[in-house]
Image 1 (tube, rainbow, N blue to C red):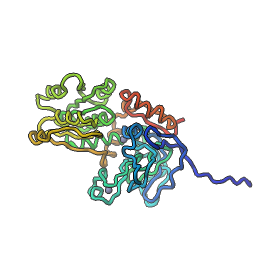
Image 2 (image 1 turned 90 degrees about the horizontal axis):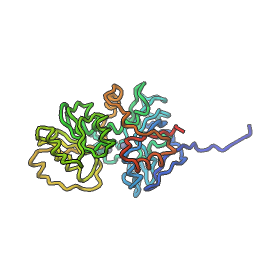
Image 3 (image 1 turned 180 degrees about the horizontal axis):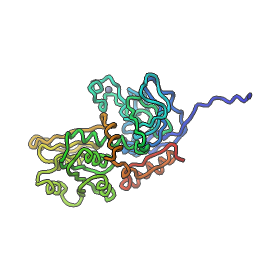
Image 4 (image 1 turned 30 degrees about the vertical axis):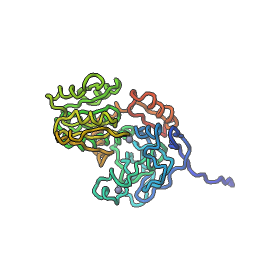
Length: 365
Ligand SMILES: [Zn+2]
Ligand SMILES: [Zn+2]
Protein backbone atom coordinates (compact mmCIF):
# COMPACT_ATOMS: atom_id res chain seq x y z
CA UNK A 1 0.00 0.00 0.00
CA UNK A 2 3.02 2.20 0.34
CA UNK A 3 3.89 1.74 -3.29
CA UNK A 4 3.84 5.24 -4.66
CA UNK A 5 4.62 5.15 -8.34
CA UNK A 6 4.85 8.46 -10.14
CA UNK A 7 1.83 9.31 -12.28
CA UNK A 8 2.84 8.84 -15.86
CA UNK A 9 1.54 11.00 -18.64
CA UNK A 10 -0.79 8.69 -20.61
CA UNK A 11 0.75 7.98 -23.99
CA UNK A 12 -0.57 6.66 -27.28
CA UNK A 13 0.75 5.39 -30.59
CA UNK A 14 0.71 7.90 -33.47
CA UNK A 15 2.22 8.39 -36.94
CA UNK A 16 4.08 11.69 -36.79
CA UNK A 17 5.33 13.56 -39.86
CA UNK A 18 8.75 14.94 -38.95
CA UNK A 19 10.00 15.68 -42.44
CA UNK A 20 10.07 14.44 -46.02
CA UNK A 21 10.41 10.62 -46.06
CA UNK A 22 10.41 10.77 -42.27
CA UNK A 23 7.14 9.56 -40.79
CA UNK A 24 7.62 7.80 -37.46
CA UNK A 25 5.26 5.68 -35.42
CA UNK A 26 5.95 6.92 -31.90
CA UNK A 27 4.55 7.01 -28.39
CA UNK A 28 3.24 10.53 -27.89
CA UNK A 29 1.06 12.29 -25.32
CA UNK A 30 -2.65 11.50 -25.47
CA UNK A 31 -4.45 14.76 -26.38
CA UNK A 32 -5.61 16.74 -23.33
CA UNK A 33 -9.28 16.74 -22.33
CA UNK A 34 -11.15 18.44 -25.18
CA UNK A 35 -11.57 22.21 -24.78
CA UNK A 36 -15.05 23.82 -24.86
CA UNK A 37 -16.80 22.96 -28.13
CA UNK A 38 -14.43 20.09 -28.89
CA UNK A 39 -14.68 16.31 -28.62
CA UNK A 40 -12.08 13.58 -28.18
CA UNK A 41 -12.44 10.63 -30.57
CA UNK A 42 -11.02 7.14 -30.12
CA UNK A 43 -10.03 6.34 -33.69
CA UNK A 44 -11.21 3.09 -35.31
CA UNK A 45 -10.09 3.52 -38.95
CA UNK A 46 -8.29 6.26 -40.85
CA UNK A 47 -7.57 6.19 -44.60
CA UNK A 48 -4.28 7.25 -46.21
CA UNK A 49 -5.00 10.15 -48.56
CA UNK A 50 -3.09 11.30 -51.64
CA UNK A 51 -2.23 14.46 -49.69
CA UNK A 52 -0.68 12.37 -46.87
CA UNK A 53 1.41 10.58 -49.51
CA UNK A 54 2.42 13.97 -50.92
CA UNK A 55 3.66 15.05 -47.50
CA UNK A 56 5.63 11.80 -47.22
CA UNK A 57 7.22 11.92 -50.67
CA UNK A 58 7.53 15.66 -51.34
CA UNK A 59 6.53 17.48 -48.13
CA UNK A 60 6.11 19.87 -46.56
CA UNK A 61 3.23 20.74 -48.89
CA UNK A 62 0.41 21.76 -46.52
CA UNK A 63 2.12 21.24 -43.15
CA UNK A 64 3.23 24.64 -41.80
CA UNK A 65 6.97 24.65 -41.09
CA UNK A 66 7.96 28.32 -41.31
CA UNK A 67 5.54 29.83 -38.82
CA UNK A 68 2.78 28.47 -36.57
CA UNK A 69 -0.61 27.98 -38.23
CA UNK A 70 -2.77 31.03 -37.36
CA UNK A 71 -5.72 28.92 -36.18
CA UNK A 72 -4.01 25.97 -34.48
CA UNK A 73 -0.46 27.05 -33.70
CA UNK A 74 0.87 23.82 -35.25
CA UNK A 75 4.35 24.05 -36.73
CA UNK A 76 7.06 21.73 -38.01
CA UNK A 77 5.59 18.33 -37.14
CA UNK A 78 2.13 16.86 -37.33
CA UNK A 79 0.21 13.66 -36.64
CA UNK A 80 -1.23 12.95 -40.10
CA UNK A 81 -4.68 11.49 -40.93
CA UNK A 82 -7.99 13.15 -41.78
CA UNK A 83 -10.24 10.43 -43.28
CA UNK A 84 -11.41 8.69 -40.15
CA UNK A 85 -14.12 7.13 -38.07
CA UNK A 86 -14.21 6.34 -34.40
CA UNK A 87 -16.18 6.68 -31.20
CA UNK A 88 -16.61 9.60 -28.86
CA UNK A 89 -14.32 9.23 -25.83
CA UNK A 90 -14.72 12.60 -24.10
CA UNK A 91 -16.82 15.72 -24.61
CA UNK A 92 -15.78 19.32 -23.95
CA UNK A 93 -17.93 21.93 -22.22
CA UNK A 94 -20.87 23.42 -24.10
CA UNK A 95 -21.31 20.52 -26.55
CA UNK A 96 -24.84 19.19 -26.82
CA UNK A 97 -26.43 16.33 -28.75
CA UNK A 98 -23.46 13.96 -28.54
CA UNK A 99 -22.80 11.09 -26.13
CA UNK A 100 -19.67 9.16 -25.15
CA UNK A 101 -19.51 5.91 -27.15
CA UNK A 102 -21.37 7.19 -30.21
CA UNK A 103 -19.72 6.35 -33.52
CA UNK A 104 -18.86 9.29 -35.75
CA UNK A 105 -16.86 10.55 -38.69
CA UNK A 106 -15.53 14.10 -39.07
CA UNK A 107 -15.36 16.85 -41.66
CA UNK A 108 -11.66 17.85 -41.76
CA UNK A 109 -12.11 21.59 -42.45
CA UNK A 110 -11.34 23.26 -39.12
CA UNK A 111 -12.18 26.92 -39.69
CA UNK A 112 -12.15 30.28 -37.93
CA UNK A 113 -15.87 31.14 -38.03
CA UNK A 114 -15.12 34.85 -38.27
CA UNK A 115 -13.76 35.54 -41.79
CA UNK A 116 -15.92 36.66 -44.75
CA UNK A 117 -16.13 33.10 -46.12
CA UNK A 118 -17.06 31.45 -42.82
CA UNK A 119 -19.77 34.07 -42.32
CA UNK A 120 -21.16 33.26 -45.77
CA UNK A 121 -21.26 29.51 -45.21
CA UNK A 122 -18.16 28.86 -47.33
CA UNK A 123 -16.12 27.40 -44.49
CA UNK A 124 -14.17 25.12 -46.85
CA UNK A 125 -12.41 28.19 -48.27
CA UNK A 126 -11.92 29.88 -44.86
CA UNK A 127 -9.05 32.38 -44.76
CA UNK A 128 -7.59 30.45 -41.81
CA UNK A 129 -8.49 26.93 -42.90
CA UNK A 130 -6.73 24.28 -40.80
CA UNK A 131 -7.15 20.86 -42.29
CA UNK A 132 -7.18 18.11 -39.65
CA UNK A 133 -4.08 15.92 -39.98
CA UNK A 134 -2.12 18.53 -41.95
CA UNK A 135 -2.51 21.80 -40.06
CA UNK A 136 -3.63 20.28 -36.76
CA UNK A 137 -2.91 16.85 -35.31
CA UNK A 138 -4.90 14.12 -37.03
CA UNK A 139 -6.17 10.58 -36.71
CA UNK A 140 -3.25 8.24 -37.43
CA UNK A 141 -3.31 7.89 -33.66
CA UNK A 142 -5.33 6.25 -30.94
CA UNK A 143 -7.06 9.54 -30.07
CA UNK A 144 -7.71 12.85 -31.79
CA UNK A 145 -9.46 16.05 -30.65
CA UNK A 146 -11.75 17.76 -33.17
CA UNK A 147 -14.39 20.53 -33.07
CA UNK A 148 -17.82 19.04 -32.27
CA UNK A 149 -19.46 21.03 -35.08
CA UNK A 150 -17.51 18.94 -37.61
CA UNK A 151 -18.83 15.57 -36.40
CA UNK A 152 -21.41 13.38 -38.15
CA UNK A 153 -22.98 10.40 -36.38
CA UNK A 154 -22.88 7.03 -38.15
CA UNK A 155 -26.19 5.12 -38.29
CA UNK A 156 -26.46 2.02 -36.06
CA UNK A 157 -25.61 -0.74 -38.53
CA UNK A 158 -23.15 1.39 -40.51
CA UNK A 159 -19.73 -0.35 -40.73
CA UNK A 160 -17.12 1.73 -38.90
CA UNK A 161 -14.57 1.10 -41.67
CA UNK A 162 -16.98 2.66 -44.19
CA UNK A 163 -16.95 5.72 -41.95
CA UNK A 164 -13.34 6.33 -43.03
CA UNK A 165 -14.43 6.64 -46.68
CA UNK A 166 -17.01 9.39 -46.14
CA UNK A 167 -14.42 12.19 -46.41
CA UNK A 168 -13.06 11.36 -49.91
CA UNK A 169 -16.60 10.61 -51.10
CA UNK A 170 -17.67 14.05 -49.86
CA UNK A 171 -14.92 15.56 -52.05
CA UNK A 172 -16.47 13.76 -55.06
CA UNK A 173 -20.03 14.77 -54.17
CA UNK A 174 -19.04 18.41 -53.63
CA UNK A 175 -17.44 18.49 -57.10
CA UNK A 176 -20.61 16.98 -58.58
CA UNK A 177 -22.78 19.56 -56.80
CA UNK A 178 -20.59 22.36 -58.20
CA UNK A 179 -21.72 21.27 -61.69
CA UNK A 180 -25.40 21.82 -60.83
CA UNK A 181 -27.97 19.19 -61.89
CA UNK A 182 -26.37 16.44 -63.95
CA UNK A 183 -29.49 14.27 -64.18
CA UNK A 184 -29.38 12.37 -67.48
CA UNK A 185 -26.23 14.15 -68.62
CA UNK A 186 -23.05 12.77 -70.14
CA UNK A 187 -20.20 13.18 -67.69
CA UNK A 188 -16.47 12.72 -68.27
CA UNK A 189 -14.25 11.99 -65.28
CA UNK A 190 -10.57 12.54 -66.05
CA UNK A 191 -8.53 10.16 -63.89
CA UNK A 192 -9.79 7.17 -61.88
CA UNK A 193 -7.66 7.49 -58.74
CA UNK A 194 -9.43 7.75 -55.37
CA UNK A 195 -11.02 11.14 -56.05
CA UNK A 196 -11.90 10.18 -59.64
CA UNK A 197 -13.59 6.99 -58.42
CA UNK A 198 -15.41 8.91 -55.66
CA UNK A 199 -16.57 11.41 -58.29
CA UNK A 200 -17.81 8.61 -60.55
CA UNK A 201 -19.77 7.12 -57.63
CA UNK A 202 -21.22 10.52 -56.69
CA UNK A 203 -22.12 11.34 -60.31
CA UNK A 204 -23.94 8.02 -60.57
CA UNK A 205 -25.77 8.63 -57.28
CA UNK A 206 -26.72 12.11 -58.55
CA UNK A 207 -28.37 10.64 -61.66
CA UNK A 208 -25.81 11.13 -64.44
CA UNK A 209 -26.98 9.54 -67.70
CA UNK A 210 -23.63 8.29 -68.88
CA UNK A 211 -20.23 8.37 -67.16
CA UNK A 212 -17.09 8.19 -69.29
CA UNK A 213 -13.81 7.70 -67.42
CA UNK A 214 -10.50 8.73 -68.98
CA UNK A 215 -7.79 6.51 -67.51
CA UNK A 216 -4.71 4.64 -68.68
CA UNK A 217 -3.88 2.21 -65.85
CA UNK A 218 -5.42 -1.25 -66.37
CA UNK A 219 -6.25 -1.71 -62.67
CA UNK A 220 -7.96 1.68 -62.45
CA UNK A 221 -9.91 1.15 -65.68
CA UNK A 222 -11.39 -1.97 -64.09
CA UNK A 223 -12.21 -0.11 -60.87
CA UNK A 224 -13.86 2.72 -62.81
CA UNK A 225 -16.25 0.25 -64.48
CA UNK A 226 -16.83 -1.50 -61.14
CA UNK A 227 -17.96 1.69 -59.40
CA UNK A 228 -20.27 2.99 -62.13
CA UNK A 229 -18.45 4.29 -65.22
CA UNK A 230 -20.35 3.23 -68.36
CA UNK A 231 -17.34 3.61 -70.70
CA UNK A 232 -13.60 3.86 -70.18
CA UNK A 233 -11.39 5.62 -72.70
CA UNK A 234 -7.60 5.28 -72.62
CA UNK A 235 -6.18 8.67 -73.66
CA UNK A 236 -2.95 6.96 -74.77
CA UNK A 237 -4.92 4.89 -77.32
CA UNK A 238 -6.12 7.33 -79.96
CA UNK A 239 -7.66 10.78 -79.58
CA UNK A 240 -9.76 10.89 -76.38
CA UNK A 241 -11.59 14.07 -77.46
CA UNK A 242 -12.64 12.50 -80.77
CA UNK A 243 -13.79 9.38 -78.95
CA UNK A 244 -15.93 11.42 -76.51
CA UNK A 245 -17.40 13.39 -79.42
CA UNK A 246 -18.20 10.16 -81.26
CA UNK A 247 -20.22 9.06 -78.22
CA UNK A 248 -22.08 12.39 -77.94
CA UNK A 249 -23.35 13.12 -81.43
CA UNK A 250 -20.23 15.12 -82.25
CA UNK A 251 -20.73 17.72 -79.49
CA UNK A 252 -18.72 16.62 -76.46
CA UNK A 253 -19.74 15.87 -72.88
CA UNK A 254 -22.11 18.07 -70.86
CA UNK A 255 -19.83 18.11 -67.82
CA UNK A 256 -16.29 17.04 -66.99
CA UNK A 257 -14.34 16.61 -63.75
CA UNK A 258 -10.56 16.95 -63.71
CA UNK A 259 -9.38 14.61 -60.93
CA UNK A 260 -5.65 14.32 -61.65
CA UNK A 261 -4.13 17.80 -61.34
CA UNK A 262 -1.69 17.58 -64.25
CA UNK A 263 -0.98 20.49 -66.58
CA UNK A 264 -1.97 18.46 -69.68
CA UNK A 265 -5.16 16.94 -68.27
CA UNK A 266 -6.56 20.36 -67.28
CA UNK A 267 -6.87 21.37 -70.92
CA UNK A 268 -8.11 17.93 -71.87
CA UNK A 269 -10.93 18.25 -69.33
CA UNK A 270 -12.01 21.53 -70.94
CA UNK A 271 -11.63 20.19 -74.49
CA UNK A 272 -13.90 17.16 -73.91
CA UNK A 273 -16.99 19.23 -73.03
CA UNK A 274 -19.47 20.76 -75.48
CA UNK A 275 -20.03 24.49 -75.88
CA UNK A 276 -21.64 25.97 -72.76
CA UNK A 277 -20.66 22.81 -70.89
CA UNK A 278 -19.11 22.80 -67.42
CA UNK A 279 -15.67 21.65 -66.34
CA UNK A 280 -15.04 21.20 -62.61
CA UNK A 281 -11.39 21.21 -61.47
CA UNK A 282 -10.83 18.92 -58.48
CA UNK A 283 -7.19 17.80 -58.92
CA UNK A 284 -4.37 19.44 -56.97
CA UNK A 285 -2.11 21.10 -59.56
CA UNK A 286 1.60 21.49 -58.91
CA UNK A 287 2.40 23.54 -62.01
CA UNK A 288 0.61 25.92 -64.39
CA UNK A 289 -1.00 24.85 -67.65
CA UNK A 290 -0.99 26.73 -70.90
CA UNK A 291 -4.46 27.69 -72.09
CA UNK A 292 -5.90 30.26 -74.49
CA UNK A 293 -8.87 31.82 -72.70
CA UNK A 294 -10.43 32.77 -76.02
CA UNK A 295 -11.58 29.15 -76.02
CA UNK A 296 -13.88 30.04 -73.12
CA UNK A 297 -15.02 33.27 -74.78
CA UNK A 298 -15.88 31.58 -78.06
CA UNK A 299 -17.63 28.56 -76.53
CA UNK A 300 -19.16 29.94 -73.32
CA UNK A 301 -17.74 26.94 -71.47
CA UNK A 302 -17.61 27.31 -67.69
CA UNK A 303 -14.61 26.26 -65.63
CA UNK A 304 -15.32 25.83 -61.90
CA UNK A 305 -12.98 25.15 -58.97
CA UNK A 306 -13.93 22.70 -56.21
CA UNK A 307 -12.13 22.39 -52.86
CA UNK A 308 -12.87 19.68 -50.31
CA UNK A 309 -16.57 19.81 -49.32
CA UNK A 310 -19.16 22.02 -47.77
CA UNK A 311 -21.69 20.04 -45.78
CA UNK A 312 -21.82 16.97 -48.07
CA UNK A 313 -21.06 14.48 -45.26
CA UNK A 314 -24.71 13.89 -44.30
CA UNK A 315 -25.70 13.14 -47.92
CA UNK A 316 -22.78 10.75 -48.42
CA UNK A 317 -23.59 8.88 -45.18
CA UNK A 318 -27.17 8.49 -46.42
CA UNK A 319 -26.04 7.27 -49.87
CA UNK A 320 -23.77 4.65 -48.28
CA UNK A 321 -26.44 3.63 -45.75
CA UNK A 322 -29.14 3.14 -48.41
CA UNK A 323 -26.79 1.27 -50.76
CA UNK A 324 -26.58 3.88 -53.51
CA UNK A 325 -22.83 3.95 -52.86
CA UNK A 326 -20.84 0.80 -52.05
CA UNK A 327 -17.49 1.67 -50.45
CA UNK A 328 -16.01 -1.84 -50.65
CA UNK A 329 -14.35 -1.45 -54.11
CA UNK A 330 -12.46 1.56 -52.71
CA UNK A 331 -10.78 -0.34 -49.85
CA UNK A 332 -7.67 -2.16 -51.11
CA UNK A 333 -5.87 -2.64 -47.81
CA UNK A 334 -6.44 -2.79 -44.04
CA UNK A 335 -3.31 -2.37 -41.95
CA UNK A 336 -2.19 -1.70 -38.38
CA UNK A 337 -0.89 1.74 -37.42
CA UNK A 338 2.51 0.27 -36.55
CA UNK A 339 2.89 -0.82 -40.22
CA UNK A 340 1.81 2.50 -41.74
CA UNK A 341 5.19 3.29 -43.32
CA UNK A 342 6.08 -0.11 -44.82
CA UNK A 343 2.59 -1.40 -45.68
CA UNK A 344 0.98 2.01 -46.20
CA UNK A 345 3.14 4.82 -47.57
CA UNK A 346 5.80 2.62 -49.21
CA UNK A 347 3.12 0.30 -50.62
CA UNK A 348 1.39 3.33 -52.20
CA UNK A 349 4.70 4.59 -53.62
CA UNK A 350 5.56 1.20 -55.13
CA UNK A 351 2.11 -0.09 -56.12
CA UNK A 352 0.18 3.07 -56.88
CA UNK A 353 -2.05 1.60 -59.59
CA UNK A 354 -3.05 -1.50 -57.64
CA UNK A 355 -4.25 0.53 -54.65
CA UNK A 356 -7.12 2.88 -54.01
CA UNK A 357 -7.61 3.38 -50.27
CA UNK A 358 -5.53 1.73 -47.58
CA UNK A 359 -7.19 2.13 -44.20
CA UNK A 360 -5.26 2.08 -40.96
CA UNK A 361 -6.33 0.91 -37.52
CA UNK A 362 -4.58 2.00 -34.33
CA UNK A 363 -6.34 -0.85 -32.51
CA UNK A 364 -5.39 -3.79 -34.77
CA UNK A 365 -2.32 -5.72 -33.65
ZN1 LIG B 1 -8.14 13.23 -48.12
ZN1 LIG C 1 -12.92 31.53 -41.70
